[in-house]
Amino acid sequence: MSRKVTLQQIADTVGFSKFAVSRALAGKSGVTPDTRDKIIEAATKLGYFSQRSKDQKPKPYDRSDRNVSPAKKVIAVVIPNLRDQTKDNPYWGKILDGITESVEKAGLNMIIMTEQLSDHLFSAINQQGLLGYICVGFIPTQIVLEISNLGLPIVLVDHEDPLIPSDSIFMNNFDCSRQLTSHLIGLGHRSLQFVGETSLIRSYYDRWKGYSAALEDHGIPSRQHPQLLNLFVLRPEEIHEETLNQLKELHSNNELPTAFVCINDYMADIVIHSLQRLGVQVPRDCSVTGFDDLDVNALGITTVHSAKNALGRRAVEMLQRRVAHPHEDYEKILFAGRMLIKKTTSVPPT
Image (cartoon, rainbow, N blue to C red; front, top):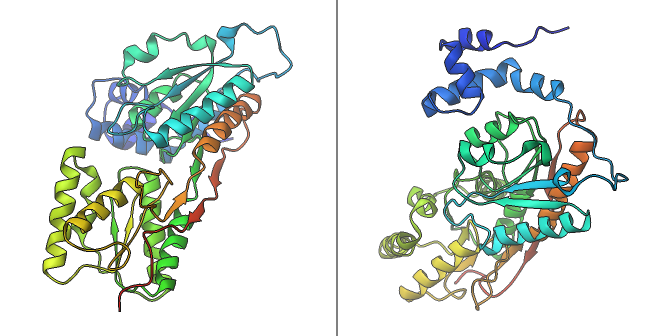
């Protein structure tokens, strides 16, 4: 039998005090973000979190138990108000709609946490009354760790934390982006650029890797302009101006590609408007694709349909499964997307 990983062992590994290790692993203040990251990484490598998940024994969820009080049948949904990651966003909002539908169908209740997350927010909730947490979108490691320390099941939607084991659910972003890019290449495009930030969330990174894989599949060298990978981290009011500036520079240097593969439909819409201001017609002069099928442009953006509502519904099912079977292996579910060919793509100009 393997020895139990202790706080002192983690402290000896990273060279910090046992107090600092305790604070970091409890998700509390008192340590710097860099110190916390090092401690969490060391704890993960030593097997501390795997050990904790085996030790925790949540009460199994019994579908036949009709006498459980409403307070015992509550799911907490965490969707922090970060950038456009809100319940009013058409992408995140539809995931939330799916969660709501499934919760109501199962006869459960839910609370939605949309504020900036803090110790006060979690301490104000009666954890004994919760079945578990569903976290939607990017959640900082400190917050995932804090929720994990509550000893309740967690399901991450469109996000995963490599340091903290949990169930997660995504679109198959890699394969969908690869397919979309391959479609453009099949039309004859050989000069392509990717637009969007690739490290903001895991889904965006997978879309970038899918795009890169498609180029490699067809022997097309990547001549990526790095500035185009930094646009989505800007404040919303800055993205339009900076996108126009970047495309203007490419256009003046005769380096404008024949196709842009954008991180999502919002970015695609911005690229299309910028091209139009430069006198470049879409798709006659330049093709543009998006992702998520958000219907943000009357022109009709070639995109990938994301099963947003279904992601939310399945997240509730995953949480119920985890409550009923707390010691089964963690799952990572990928939903297949569907490419929608609309009006913003065509063969490249001759």
